[in-house]
Length: 143
Image (cartoon, rainbow, N blue to C red; front, side, top):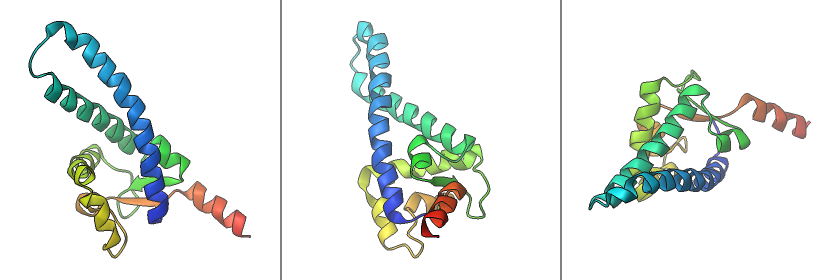
């Protein structure tokens, strides 16, 4: 399993990447919806951004178990026995991660969890591992 520091560093990188994705998605939304001038713009924009972020994460986790920041930090998401995530499990992880991330509870839980897992990983039956390439690179450095 991957260490907590590396997972938090990956999350910070993920936040930077999400700012860019959100900027493009919000610009598209506002360009398309501004002419309509309706009263529910803000909640719809927030829902749109949540869906865009969800599509990004679910696609990456299901396709290869890694987002770009996870790949950079040598992390891989899988089931506890190391198998790739199915689409339903990737969706479940995202749905559970959103409230935990917004409140901070999901990440704070890792401080008391015996395996240092985030709450959404514990509940969704997923685990973040050090990728095989990262483990091989570390063993070369230690040798």
